[in-house]
Image: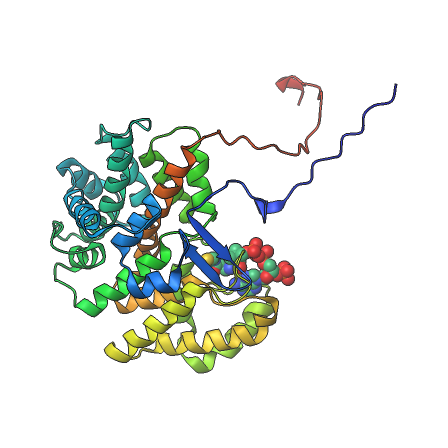
Length: 383
Ligand SMILES: CC(C)(COP(=O)(O)OP(=O)(O)OC[C@H]1O[C@@H](n2cnc3c(N)ncnc32)[C@H](O)[C@@H]1OP(=O)(O)O)[C@@H](O)C(=O)NCCC(=O)NCCS
């Protein structure tokens, strides 16, 4: 009797193009540069919606009525308050540590203060999502102030998420334009299909872990420079280059050394990231209003030079290229750029967590074993 031939499983590096879930949260067409949240084009949401409304849309799949929206905003404002011991914990963390690590630890700790996290109880589910979306910006702003020896600024319930975040960072109410710019940036970062951190969220969610654990795990995945961490690196590069005339030789040297240019390229987009287009326009308006800086001029030239060399390979600016420039102009510290990404993306993680809970099956993929078999164990005295 002959052995049945079983085809060897094929390894797809990085699971590129392999569907791992069915989802109605967001949609991307990378060749056409389309991004939609729950079927709404990102351009429409950036122009007409707000971060809070976008959170509702992501969580519940439809736009809220006025009454639903007002109630949601009120609950978000209430849920911003942190327990005093949470603030003590943030104060105790090493100030020289990265704010993303502080955020990952503090979202996890926030869950320890919550008794409402039974994933089978619909009230707890709503409560946990609201709490995480409301408290994440507060945790980031609080850590930033405490690490530099400043007093904690309590959240202002009359302000929306973006304005309140800027207020908590500085202790001064931001102007409407600055708050709106940040609000749009939050809308743009709230969700992006099956990226690495959202996938991490869904894997952890599939174990029936609570949403605080799900979000803190996803925030950990977001720290990496190939994912959320790229926006920090972009600003460092722009500062290092220093002036537009130094861009061309810098790009030549970088590409010759087979180095990557941070803020360019995307696994899915083969045209310019639609979020980058919106942020670029915002950056232009912001710099026109508040005055240009060498960093902006270097960025414009860097985009030109990289597109000239890599555009034909489908490598264009991604969302991280312009977000750092915008945040720096808003006075946000460089190491807070990825936490600002997280402030927004927790809305997407929560929407995916809720979706994962419907007909959940724990993730347990396969592997291709490349090691040996039946090896001889040699006693330690003879090795
Ligand atoms: C986002 C990213 C990880 C996508 O990765 P990917 O789809 O796996 O593509 P790869 O990293 O395999 O790159 C494919 C090719 O394009 C090149 N490439 C991709 N992004 C590049 C970049 N930013 N600068 C220069 N070359 C780049 C790679 O060197 C590689 O070239 P090769 O085929 O000659 O080896 C990648 O583009 C990248 O590292 N970008 C910089 C980091 C960044 O901005 N991340 C934020 C993403 S929103």
